[in-house]
Image (cartoon, rainbow, N blue to C red; front, side, top):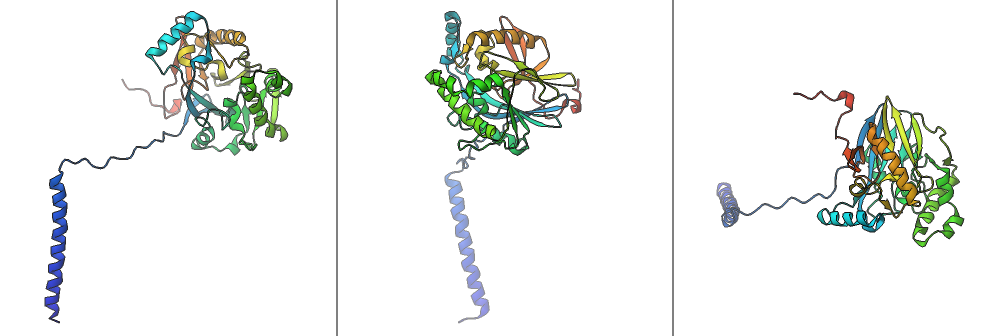
Length: 343
């Protein structure tokens, strides 16, 4: 059998030869391709969580991303000359019809209030419906929401309230909507006489509202009655019969949640006279906008626009015959804690 010393030498010799062979193979690969590119890192298609916080006085406002989309030129209605200019401008900028869908959360320190709830699965063909996920990413849960203030009952604003099988997404929340809005969209008699292309909006509104009505959580308002401290109702008729904005004020600062006052910012800011096919009363919608926009441009009011580019928070400034949108500047600190800029 041989001595243990001889056997150890033989094992060491075999192991050394195997190691040398492995090294030679590795070196051969290196010599064959010294400039070969390393394996590419995989792409990560997920974006950052869809929320952005803003402080308005003592209130914390959080924009909640519901999804992005692209509008259609067919939505817009205006004079032949204006529409011709829009068509020409689109040739230079094909992204003019880009839009977003956003809901907004207001934490007053006493209540958690949601203004509009996104589309859920009721509108958008799967491109929308992320609001509940954005809410959780922002550190809240649907169960914590106390109130939902609805600007109007189009499904891209209320679809997120209810699942397709009739479950309330915000089980502890009371829903507030203008009486004129509720009476219109929840009326089966009006729905029966409505044009075919508007029927889905009636059907979705009725299905979405049903579980809240059954639970006694559906409340309507018809005037300027107080609902929340520091909040004022601002009727903006035209887009829908009871279309309503909500203005919150705290410590001299204001924010206006203006609903569908504007849909396509790149087109309607320079041409606020343009209406959209979703307007129930286009003449009234244009009149409301032409009355509201000059006022907002004169005042230091933050606007929360659900269809403005996310996060949909900014201010208006007059520019020629139209307006310019200035988005809020990004900050990761509350204003009073931000350091002074260094010169």
